[in-house]
Amino acid sequence: MRLQDKVAIVTGGGGGIGRATALRFASEGAKVVVSDIHSESGEESVDQITKMGGEAIFVRTDTSIEGDMKALVEECEKRYGGLDIFFNNAGVSNEEVKLVDISVDEWDRVVSINLKGVFMGMKYAIPAMEKRSGGAIVNTSSLLGFKGKKYMAPYNASKGGVITLTKNAALEYGGKNIRVNAVCPGVIDTNIVTPWKEDDRKWPIISKANALRRVGQPEEIANAVLFLVSDEASYVTGTSLLVDGGGLTF
Ligand SMILES: NC(=O)c1ccc[n+]([C@@H]2O[C@H](COP(=O)([O-])OP(=O)(O)OC[C@H]3O[C@@H](n4cnc5c(N)ncnc54)[C@H](O)[C@@H]3O)[C@@H](O)[C@H]2O)c1
Image 1 (cartoon, rainbow, N blue to C red):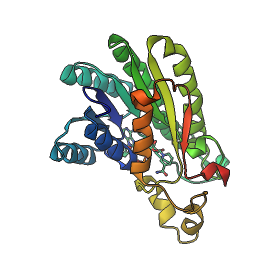
Image 2 (cartoon, rainbow, N blue to C red):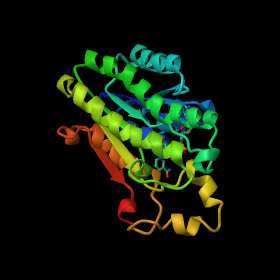
Image 3 (tube, rainbow, N blue to C red):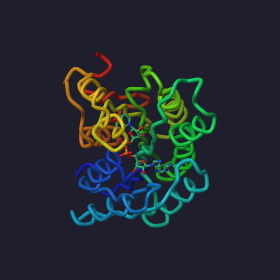
Image 4 (cartoon, rainbow, N blue to C red):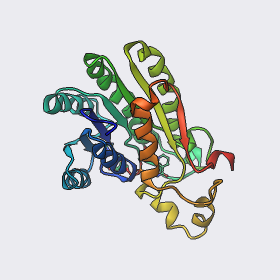
């Protein structure tokens, strides 16, 4: 078991990539704190982990609220005695309109969850990891952190920000034995892409816009995140790993 005796937090753990990763961590022996803004889906992830013989709890968290992120890490330390792994994964898409038509409220909503939330996750996770003399953080960016896509300015900007923020954190805390990396999924079959799937014109194009000519599955991201948090990635920090079926080559 690659994560035996480790304690992990997964934000957005009730959703596609978060749930798949929470289950993967648990299957490798980690105790998992599943966090999500939606209690029902978060509790369902915990149920699935418990049924497969793993150990998990649910903590409801809105990652855009500082008090929630502080309380999440505190609850993890209280229940499991510390924190080793943080998958900073919760994220949302934006209303797809031209840049000048994006309301400032919509900009703030998306950037608060996707970028400020990732910052606040690290702000509270890192001190907890320092108490354990090390740890591993993975922030969820996106293929769209590397390239533009029409009508997705707040999302693209937030995911680009996550890539740079990841480098900063890696640089500042490498000396404390805390590794910080980003995972950058391509098009993965989860709820976040439902609006694209429902568009009969767009989906046949978007779903094959990569070298492998197919969408990815959440488990394929979970495998990459598992590698990044495991000891097998002991010399990997500050990197942004594309898991996009070759989407950036396209
Ligand atoms: N699916 C893709 O194609 C794709 C591609 C690139 C990046 N991503 C990123 O992967 C991450 C996970 O998304 P997913 O594909 O699993 O989608 P998803 O919608 O299935 O999961 C997202 C989860 O985050 C939760 N969430 C949303 N806002 C939250 C908040 N404020 N606080 C706490 N939890 C919140 C949702 O309830 C949901 O469970 C996101 O950061 C997303 O941007 C996804």
